[in-house]
Image (cartoon, rainbow, N blue to C red; front, side):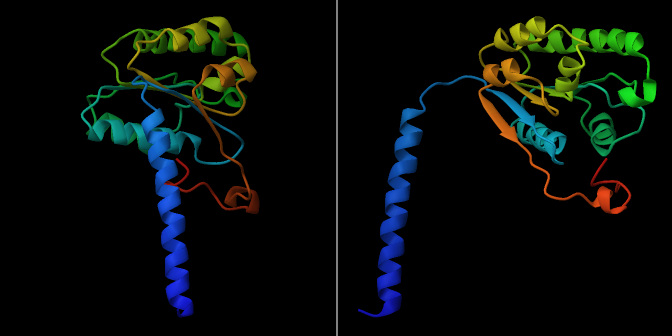
Length: 203
């Protein structure tokens, strides 16, 4: 038997074993319901991943709601696209910009709570298949929103509705509440090397 034949046989056996494991895992996952996803960490790509799921859901003709906390003063590509090309998406933005720009805690809290009312409305509506709460974690970290109310709304949302939360941190209770938690780790970032934020990549 040649080396290539042995390698091919070894590869086939490994792939057969892997397929059996994957098939067994799929067979065991028999619960049909929406999922709660947290995208956190200090790396770039959390919101980008969430908006990728928005595109995925729209591809299946699903009903989508998006609420953006913090962002809003500077136009972003996702905002432009959703407003112009996807009017069916229920899109709401806090619109105050970043907290280090506003420097007004009372106004930020008022804006966060008004924005949360829109998020709570979506989380309570069974017509929504997917709800994205972009940068929500900061509202919990800054104590702008009551954590118990936020976690309860996520836990008590309609059974088939999925929710995606993005942002750094958010606390251990939020992590425990979510079904899937992914952490985006920064290895290096162009901005720290003096490269300006790029339209279509960074915003």
